[in-house]
Image 1 (cartoon, one colour):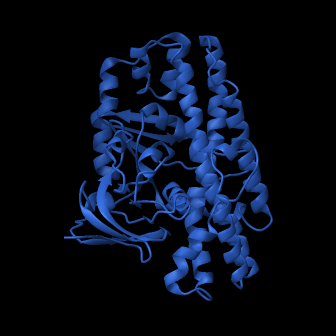
Image 2: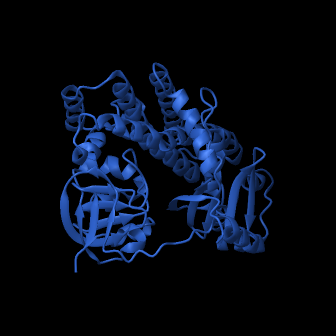
Image 3: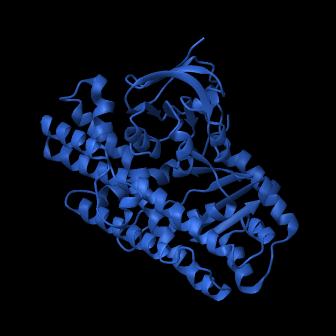
Length: 408
């Protein structure tokens, strides 16, 4: 049996251009203060893309993150990354609604790349650092928290820190959640190590949420300015360019070959090799996907799945699979939202949901944060929910125990 070399992490609806900029941003990360950087490849089939990572690199980057976010350095690191994102957000807002010339856009694009790297860098730290922090904290809390209450307790303790400034309008934890978190902290006999881990976990939750929101805002603004300097048909075509060919077109007007565009729409793989972005497309990409990335999809005929409790509660309802932005328009009030992972772009569907269930993610994931704010049940990390359920299945989401079950 062929050994799986890479591990699938998430699936999204994105353009090749968006994903290419993200790969470059993960590579650059937050170089001014840290060393962590994701080098994972992204595989795309049309607009559906999947991020893969090498488990060895994952552990290596995780060790860097945990060494940099430790002790008294945690607030310095968190505060500096927050400041970088705040500066990028304020910079982009300053250009909102402005019409640019081609020359002005070229200068703007350079700064976009710089600020985008800071926003995605925040996700590097939070997304890869959170699992290890959560595991250690759970092991320590088990000494004075009942097993049935562990996930709920960590969910409460991971409520994002409350910050003031530019980014408050993008995310601000409710007063009730913050009070709940502080009340639990005061009620537990926490060691200094546990308090340190809780502080770091709150940073990671905040940085993940804001990293997603700031980077999405930056890219959306980037595209809005682009619409003023290219024709509508060219704007759509540019969505399938990589950054190098994109800037080549902006600077010289050189377009990609039509056959290459079609190959990219069928299949592509982008990754950083020797510090440079590399892209292969078409049949070459498909062959490499089969040999290096394709997963053995397990049979998921079970009537129930288990995951991590992110927000407690028990509800019953019919499922609605929401993978892409277009999917959310079919979402009905009171349905159970089932997704790979959620993003700010899916908020319209999330606000209609009676509960949220995801394949991926932990307690600092977007779905977990939003579910707590909306006070609806949420189970994350089920691995196979989008495979096990289809639209219209009647299920029970028991987010007290972390079980999602089909109801016959």
